[in-house]
Length: 148
Image (cartoon, rainbow, N blue to C red; front, side, top):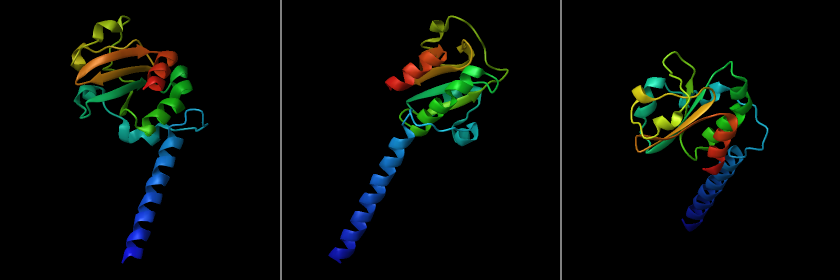
């Protein structure tokens, strides 16, 4: 009986270790992986649902399929989302999205009616139902995800 328990214990430990290795490889931003947006379809949400997610803190990434900057950052943002350090949702360009320049005015908002972004790509952070970060551009987005 002790031998069976020992084998099961070792099997569970090896499975756990394997899972940790897979997670760490997914988090490797330097690894050249060519992702497709279909791979994060489970993380794609509608614009109207941005403030209706269950997590206490999460990111929402805005992208367009015709945006060259979005294409340039695609593999890194998908790598980050699959790493699952901070839950990251994706919102595809749509007619409901509003645009403006001074996104600092959106800090602290709690509803979709007051939300606007600068353009694509953009990243917002929602913490405890409040918007705490709203920036556009590759450098600002990568800086934020690399620091989390």
